[in-house]
Length: 467
Image (cartoon, rainbow, N blue to C red; front, side, top):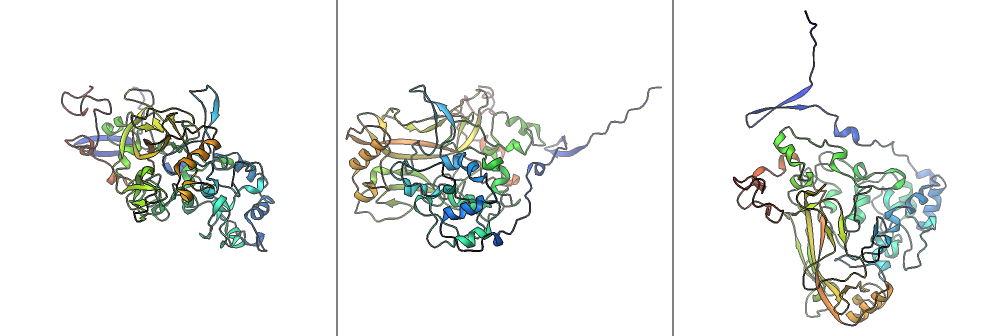
């Protein structure tokens, strides 16, 4: 008589729509979340008043001698990250905020003191900044626990900051440390990203389930070794190297229903789990620089500013959906444009069926920004700096100075062209019960434009499936 073999299967039994499903138990996502050592009270290490940010850093280096060198090697300090081949010249170049154009405040050259308020360093006021000086690293901006630390022009501490009190308070970064810059990118609260704003400093469950219900920190997902913060900002990045993903913690097929799991081959997690963005703080969706300089209009931060032009803000926005393989085509300084149509500054690559591509949610930011009508090039004007548009309201002068700083020529033929930026969404994840349901996408008038996504019709329609 054969021996009996006892096989034990550990599973969760789930009933959905009349189907009995077995979902094997797996490691908890919490197993992937790092732990932090208890906070060390630094008060005794800073017994005397501190006169400058550089002096604070110098004192930090006495116990943390490698920290500045580690930070100086990062994109947070260099404002350069990915290496790519310039399609026009064939040269390998590093790209980042330091040398790329966007369609918000456009570019940093000539505008350094204003832009570098959010630099992780001190004193970047011109193109001669010393990136090798260790005391130029700003330790306090990421480690302050008082909530009082603020940066001013060129990244210097604001004059009313008590540097000694801040230095005594330091600990590992919290959400408000990261948000002090990232929630205010583009010159105001929630302006750039749409899925990052100050509601995430102290969120509820529906602002973001990770940071609200589970009280997670930015560094739980983005933390890296030796100050190399992980994650990609595709406004300044072109590939997924050093990126993070939902599947760093969650399973590739996390759902009890196999029909939903099948979606993960072609649909990003974020698509279903971020139904809307900018839910409590409006985000800028349109910026028209061509309307700037009008003395007859009243300044209103959400509609019009003489120095910046006309805006459109929106909240609780339904994302745009496009295929995305985690790489982008990037406009580089010196590229020519077709000024008869929309100019994409960071077009996501990918289409239906292409390797690695999934349907992703995006914030689309549209703008009209200045360019040279003769050379067909986008020119980053000087705005906040000397001779800049914000001071003299002279576009030709601002464009001429800006062109010279980046090594381009300006013909004097000013125009304004429509541009678009794609901002992939990964924050403001709602609780599972608030995620998109079948009918949100697969119904008459649903949110997906199936034809634009490469389908003949809704793939769930009779006759449309597989087209």
